[in-house]
Image (cartoon, rainbow, N blue to C red; front, side):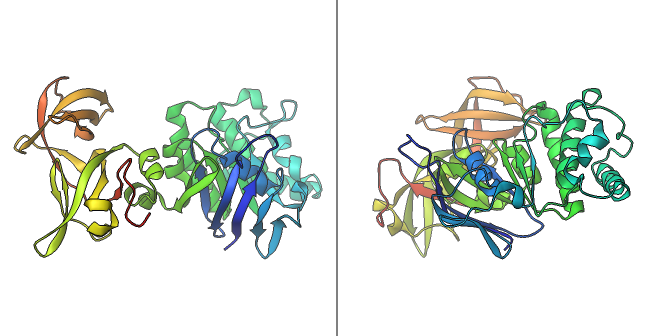
Length: 361
């Protein structure tokens, strides 16, 4: 591993709970890690700790072979050889683009400095922008210049703190894909903070979901979506609901009985005695629910959101249980209409039912 966070905790005076609480994860060289979570979850504090701007109260941060933060060691931020890209870009308005990019490599000889500036501007797709000033650039172009400036000194690790938050929604995801390509072309290792799932999915090799200072899961996007480790991750990532279910032995196998029928793809599912009486909640994603006029189970449309190629329907079963479903947008049903639905679940994910402990807990 290249970056290793081990049991890291950070406290702020006057706060009863730590801002970062016993967090551990590793990031391989050349990979892009993303920290995601609601506001105040500790992701920016964790990024600042990696940068050297916050001290560790317990645990450690290791970069390559060396510990850079612990209770006994604190390498100064300016000695960590890290680049940072901020929300507001922090470009110098009185310097042209080339001057901004060259800011961190002033120690190099003039010819070498100019060559490096040209290299990173070409890398971020702005080879002819050197003589322009920040106010002459679009927000996306300013962000690329900020990225070029951070990459110019060839940092060991690049840190990005919500770098697209000032851009419009349509531009964010596209720029996230572009930045991923730039970082991969540069062979950079990066740690990125965002609250936007689409950004996280677009840019990250590994994504960590945080809540109240704790890291719930550090994994690939596919695993976060299909194999969430905790109820919070399941609820935070994607669209879905928790539906009451009953895991039971039936014949020679195990089934998860739900209001939509029995679910049987249970390779990764707990055995019935994992929950008291086999009672649990099953995660049903919007893409687990299929619109099927011939299905015996009917649901009423209580809300619908047009997404272009599809609707996100919020549905209610006759018994009152809520579901969500992605339905192709040519199926334009009216609010209040009843439609047929069935479950098509590839990964059955269950959690203890609210108010009922698992038998192991």
